Image (cartoon, rainbow, N blue to C red; front, side, top):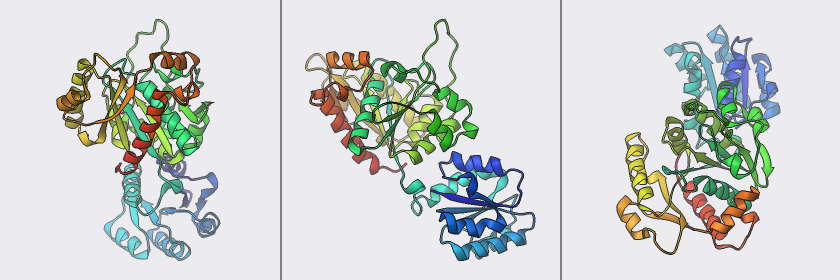
Length: 377
């Protein structure tokens, strides 16, 4: 969604623009103009949303709202410092949809955008976010994330974002044989000024179909404890990805930390990846209890069984009985092909387009897309 901002030499205008960009709105430098040029810029840019930063005299704001209302049908937002009730009433009567408090601008803007979502589509579309998570190490969740993202790209013929959304060290760079110039840590360290241009600059495009933001690898001798990603950083990053890409795949940390839970809350579809083995099933049950305790609904999780063998594993029926949850998808084991793909740093489909495991990932992408689009974020 494109936004044009009008102001009158406001001291915080660049800070406010960064907040706007951080919510995934499209706002070029030339879209931030003095109030005197606002009507002309609206005519040139045809924005989806207009934001007015109130001048010192509230009466001037009302005049500007009236003039803007005559040249655009886009929703008009006004922002003022501690707006009084009378100012709010007059602004709405003049044509403003909402009046935001500048002291709480980031929070109130986010709330208003959620309300406007059904009416105005951000950037012409609202991309789907797919999260993959496993409470167990070794379940192959990063492999699932890579191949799900690759199949989504093949299905849509658009580039798909793949993000290693966990504290360092990460797995995607190792599995795809990448040496990223910028990492998730770099982005989240500067999340306050993260915008579309910055994110486009840091994405790695070395793999077909995929724009990758990896986490840095482990450093020899580095035993320091990594803090979980800040929820606000995760929120801003995922919102931007949603506006920039038709599909985004998040590879989440094995730890159910606050950053991972924030990502789960923003995702359309969450794949809970486990092997059909009792330890994995038990850990999945404990995780689901913890997720519900933190406000996430069980219905948001879709059980994906990975590395399924023909013998010696827990049956699908027993897993469903233990977890009281249907299996969404089963991915067969193909250790030989999976090892070759990892050693060459490529998705499975680049090794074989007709293998059973590759066809399983293609089916997972189709089902996840269908399920994700029917979900509410």
